[in-house]
Amino acid sequence: MNGSTRVLYGTKNGIARITISRPEKLNALDRQTVQEIDRVVASAGQDPSVGVLIITGAGEKAFVAGADIGELASQTPVEGTAYARAGQAVLDRLERLGKPSIAAINGYALGGGLELAMACTLRVAAESAKLGQPEVALGIIPGYGGTQRLARLVGAGRALEMILTGEPIDAREALRIGLLNRVVPAAELLPAAEALARTILTRGPVALRYALQAVHEGLQTTLNEGLSMEAALFGLCCATEDMREGTRAFVEKRKPAFKGR
Image: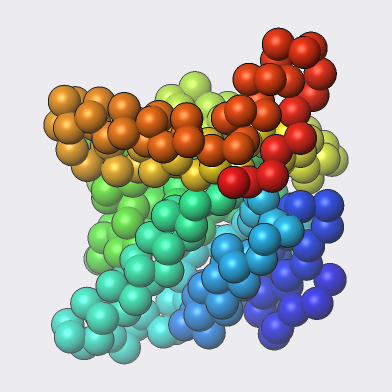
C-alpha cells in the first residue's frame, strides 16, 4: 500500500483502500490530510479498475476523531468560512464521485470524522465505535456538512439532539436511527466492508453510477422532479451494453459479465 504522510492508498481487485493515518492525533483532519484525501479520492475516481472505495482510520481507537483543534483555534471569520467551504468541497466530491464508497468506522467518528463518514455512500462500524458532532462544546457548529447530511440521514429531530448536546452515540444506537448500515465485531470490520464492496462490484457499473446520481440529486428536488430524473436515467440504462448483458444473463440463468458501458 503506497501513500503520503497522512493518507495511505492502495487498490486490489477493484477496491480502493484509503486509510487516514495520523494515529498519534487520533487521525484528526488538518488541512494537509483533507487535501490528501481529495487527491486519493480523485485518483480512485479516475482509475477504471476501481469500482468501490473503502475509507478507514489507522489504529484501533479512531476512524477520525475530528478536526485538528490547533488549526481551528486561530481562525478569523473570513478564514473560518474558507476553511469550511474547502472541506465541504472535498466531501462533496467524494459523495458525487460516481463510485460507491464505504466508511469502515473502527473507533471514534467525531466532528469532521462523522462528516467524512456521512459523505460516503454506506457506513459499517465496529461495535466499539462512537459517533457524534461535538462542535458546540468548542463554541462552533459542524462545518463540513454535518448540519445538512446528518439531518438528511436521520431526520431533523435526531440530528438536532446530536448537534445541540454534542454527545456521542454508540454504534448500536447509530444503527437504530439509520446513521449506520451495519455494525460488526471489531475484528470483522474490514472483512465485512470488503464483502459488501465485492457484492457491489458484481453489479452494473453504469447502473451504479446512475443510481447514485438519482438518489443524491433527487434529494435536492421535489418528488415529481426526482421521478422525472429517475425515468430519464432509467432510459439511459436501457441504451447500455450492460443492460443487454444483464437481462440476457438473467434469462440464461448465468452471472452477467458487465463491461461498464
